[in-house]
Length: 230
Image (tube, rainbow, N blue to C red; front, side, top):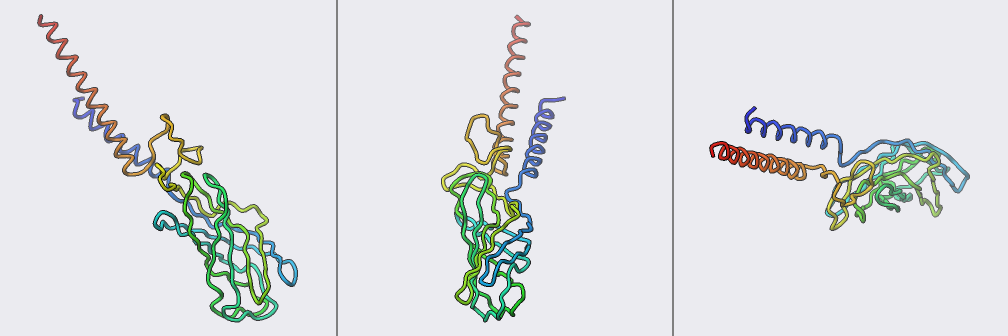
C-alpha cells in the first residue's frame, strides 16, 4: 500500500473513532422519574406519586433548569382561588457538584377545586456551574403555600436523577467527563475530550505523527541508498 493510501486509511479510522466517541458520550441525559412524595398538610399526612421531568437549557454562562410534574401530589379541602397557591421546590445536585438549586414558578392560574389533585406549574431556576464535570439533578422537597398555610412534600423512595449534564465551570477547560470520573483531572494521561473541536485536534495530531514518520522513513531510505552506492 502506498504512503498516501496508508495516510488516508489512518485518517479515516481516526475520524470514525472520533465519531464513535461522540455518539457514546452525550452532553446531557434526561429521564422521567417516578417520585413518591410524603406530604405534611394542614389536615394531615398525604402521599402521592408523580413522574418528574427535569430539563436543562444553556443560557449564557449557566443553564435554565425546568422541573415538571405530570400528576398532582396533594389536594385541598376547599377551593383554591386563582393566584392563591404558590409552589417552589428544591433540586438536589450530585456528581461533580454537591448542593441544592431552588426552583420557583407562578401561582395557580385557575381555580383548583376542593379535594382534587393540585397540579403544580412548571418551576424553574438558573444553575451556574462551579465545578466542571457530570452533574446530576434529582427531585427534592416540594413546598406549597396556599391560603396562609404551608404544605411540604418530601421524596421517600430515593428517586434517581431526572437529568445529567456535562458542564464547564467559569474559566474551566472542559465541558465533558471521563469514564469513572466526575470532573476533568487535567492529568497528562487524560483521554481527549469529546467534541468536534477536540476531535479535529486529535485527528490533526495523528496526521502530524503520520507525516513525521513518513519524513523520517524517506530520510532513512535516502541515506541507505547513498551508503549502498558508495
